[in-house]
Amino acid sequence: MTTEQQTVCTLHNLLDYDAKKFTSAEILLQRHLPDWILHADSLKLKTVLQKYLGFVEQHVKMLEGFFESEQISSISTSNRVMQAFIDEAAAKMAVCADAAIKDACLLASIQAINHFKISMYGTAAAFAKALGMEEQAAIFYKAEVEEKQIDDRLSQLAEHEVNIHAKTPVVLPG
Image (tube, rainbow, N blue to C red; front, side, top):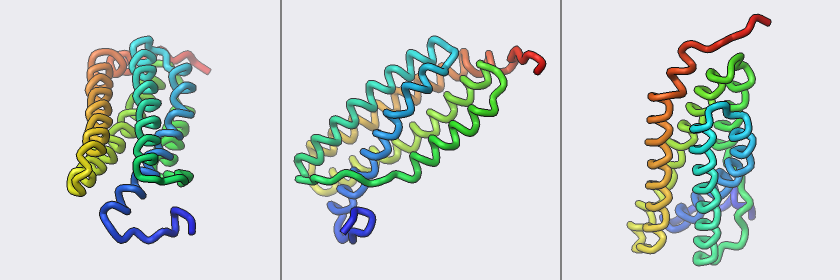
């Protein structure tokens, strides 16, 4: 029986199922962030995204540890939500005519992904806590806090740099 067809009968099953989805989401993001970092024009945005990539890599390792503790051997499952966020980001950035506009688009796309992940990790922390899995709850809560830190930094960067530059882009006639 594949993960997609498994029946979820308990909150613990749901936590495990969701954690598989988180892993898929993080791996997808881990694959795309390096390219997005290369294409960012703002040095500050590149720096924040590089820090975010570090968090994503830590989250993948944390989830691998979770699977070991849960004795879950197969984590190959897709995350259609993350894939949709990534596809939407790529489509939007493809139509941006200016580096400053592309940075604003990229930042907004990353922030949408980030908000999704804040929800994912917050829910997992709540499930783990309800199940008396204090160590796992703390790990998921830490990931949620890291996501919120990146969100705050992205908001500051948008407000004080990226959106200001995007207001008056230099678009050369084609």
